[in-house]
Length: 181
Image (cartoon, one colour):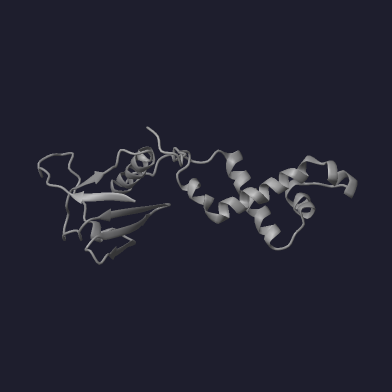
């Protein structure tokens, strides 16, 4: 969520970029009880979320972005840059914090294994379908895919039960202990 605030600007400054937030195409906006204003804007393949402490005035205005100096600054700054590019009519650019292909594939396997297990499939059946296991019962007992599929189900359970929130901050890991930056 990007926090925006109205800001005065010199109209003669060529760097000034006035915006009419209310007229963004495909904007979904909602006002809170306390007059705060939430915006969700779909622009091409990107979705942008922003928040203002008050309802924006009519017409084109200039805004500043409030970025807390915290462990998520890098992700927030990237989101601001994507919003700015969309407002300026530029392409989204490269997503710098995308999952590596191997990590993405493993997360897909975790969810498939978890779903299969929830639907009553045995670990062996999951290993056959997801990991290509073929063999007899004796082969299964000593095959490394037996433990691999159990780890996939266990990891999938972790993410389904709330661990998915870590994925939203990838690659930044927030430690649960209190410490210094």
